[in-house]
Length: 301
Image (cartoon, rainbow, N blue to C red; front, side, top):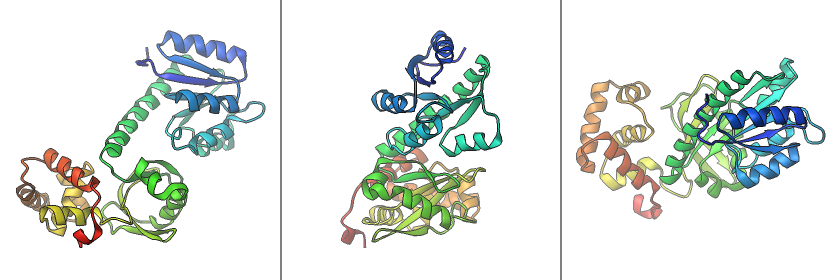
């Protein structure tokens, strides 16, 4: 039985039989079930309740499931909801269309209950972990975004939207074109957004080409400058500390920077001494507090 933890699931289908079957099955497995009979209604209900997951019929009269999903993903408030497409279509072109629209998975009709529950559990777990990471970054004022291999912004922290507004998608597209052949730890990428030159740091990249990036506020000193100014760190010590903030181990930092783990340990000894902390966790927390503060630019120069 799926550990649903009362997750809210929106079922979108124009078939009464499918809706009845899924409503009964999901309710028995502990989910809160909401129903929409079409794409427009799904958008309206999603805006009101923010479901934890959406099971979306691909082909419906009026607005198709593909179109509804694209509109969901265009909304910063709703874009992180995982959408699983339910379809009688098995052609590769239709499957690709579902993923291009922003779906995380698909399941073919007739629906096999156990298979659907397993897929739901997996994607709900992924969404929960991602949401926790977003909350941590949001709470610490970090400017972070994730872009897909095609340059589409999958998510971004609120600070990104506050500073760049409707230019966030443009930022993602320009970043995608500049990230070819780059790896975490390489020199920052500079992209033009309106009148600003924006410095972006590649933090991580997965096998599908999805990239996690830290973006510097163009109207603020970069994070390394803040740490150097606040704690008297060297540039290399600040660089090591920033990788600690982003969750990297000493071994990973050594690989990224082309140094030995022993050298990383030596740098961290100096970091701890200068910051007057005893461990990595305290150093990361103190660094995050420093990074989240807005400085008078003249003070950090």
